[in-house]
Every structure is written in structure tokens, then in C-alpha cells.
Length: 147
Image 1 (cartoon, helix red, strand yellow):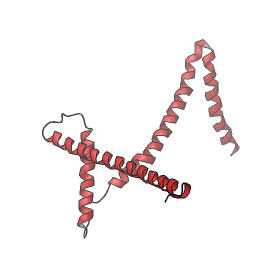
Image 2 (cartoon, helix red, strand yellow):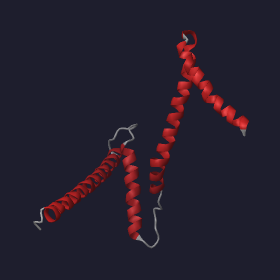
Image 3 (cartoon, one colour):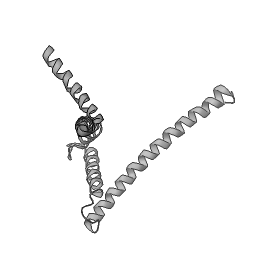
Image 4 (spheres, one colour):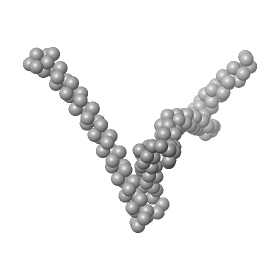
């Protein structure tokens, strides 16, 4: 309705007027409130977007059944994923010293991290080499007509 629109339009107008109080030294402290509101609003929206876009889908993909009846392959795969996630998270838990059993768990997490980074790097190299092969094939066959 019309009255709700006017009230909603008053909020940014009042915040804008409060920003202008920076020009008056005695009440310049009032200009901090709309700036804090704007920064808080932006941070809140950014955090929610980051959580919904990255963290929540990863958490959803990690929540898997440990036992899959009739498929030992999926059961072992799920067990490896769960062990990898838990040991990797434990590696970044710095409240206790990584000696003894906690050290072995943390080292297992490091191994999973290295495997993940290695697979990611290998995939990147494979993709770049594939692009290079395609370009070399184009140069030798279509452009230079050597092949």
C-alpha cells in the first residue's frame, strides 16, 4: 500500500540525513550509525550468500550413509570420504598438540589434503595439455597442412 511505501522510503532518507551530520562537528558521531548499518547489512548478505553458495552444498554432499546395502564399493567409498573429512578437519584443530594419537590423525588429514591437491593439480595439467594438443593439431593440419 501507499503508506508502507512511504515508510520504507523514509528509512534510507533518514540514514542519508544522518550521514550528512558528519559536516557538523558537534553531532558528527551520528554519522557512524548509518555507516555501521550499511557495513553490517553488506557483511550479513555476503556471509549468507557465501554459506548458501559454497558451504551448505559441500555439507550436503558430505552427509552420506556409512553403510550401503548391496554395494561394498559404495560403502568403502563413503567410509573413505568420512575418514578424509574428519581427519582433515582434525588437522586444522589447533587446540591440542599434534603428538601421539592426535598427531597420527592429523598426519592422515595431511595425506588426504595432499591427495586432493595432487588430483586437482593433475586435472589442471591434463586440461591444459588437452588444449595444447588441440591447438597443435589445428596448426599442423588446418593451418600449415603438414598432416
